[in-house]
Amino acid sequence: MKYRLAFLLLSLPLCALAPQGTSRSIARGVTQDSPRSIAIDSRLAADAGLRVGDRVVIASEPGMPGDSVVVAAIVERRADPAEIARGEYRIRLHLDHLQALLGYGDRVDRFAVGTRDARATRDAVARINSAAYGFRAHRSADVAVETSRTFAVVSRFHRAIGTITIVASAIFLLCIMLLKVDERRRDVAALRLIGCSSRTIVGSVVLEAAAVAVLGSLAGIGVGAAASWIVNYHYQAVYRTPLRFSIVTVDIVLLAVTLSLVLGIVAGWLAARRLVRTPPLALLGR
Image 1: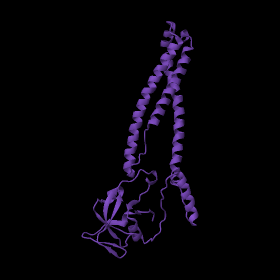
Image 2: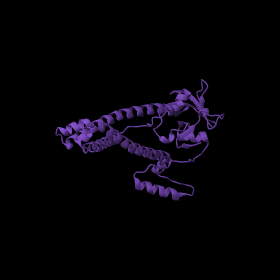
Image 3: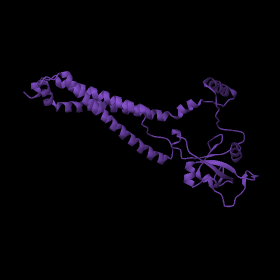
Image 4: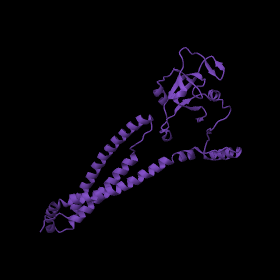
């Protein structure tokens, strides 16, 4: 059974409604005048149909005599990626109540120590590790890194996919621009014959490509925001967590618009330069 200070993880069979009329709680043979209070997570409240003020019985093991307690609060889960796949229910108890319930005595499996700064953290880690054999202190940042390795691998995988997609889309965009500009060879030949300079023609094509890139970026941002909302709506309901699985940030939008604009301008410039270097009569097929 895993817990951290006043946190106790219980499965659903360990928590059941107490009989009506129960007015006293029992903690290993010690009677109390009023039941203790607990806080439960929203997932347990939804699955068990519990509300604030309900009276339940908690025990250290299924079928064992337990304590009658009152639900004092319902707590929403944090947006922690490490807790997404966990199916446990979480109950918060007072520390003395938890010790009496488990018969664990003045012992803990793990505890957290708050420090003022990085230097104090290093000193605390060194002193705790040298205090006794079997003790091992870790910085919270190191624990977060260790538990987030899976997400780091997924992030690198997504970055690799994104890079490949950008390169492939750039090649595809260049091919499309070459085909589109090549379809206007007669118009370009007419402009060249009436005296328009190559710089003017290239500039007009580049401006048109930039406008198309900006419009495409705006459309892409809209599609991305809609897709992100659908993903969050679905998976937040599946895992019942406030964690956002997909986000569209300002950095992502700026990167997408910049890449689109740069690739559009480069593709338009290359396509236009290829066309204006061809003699006008050759463009007309003569």
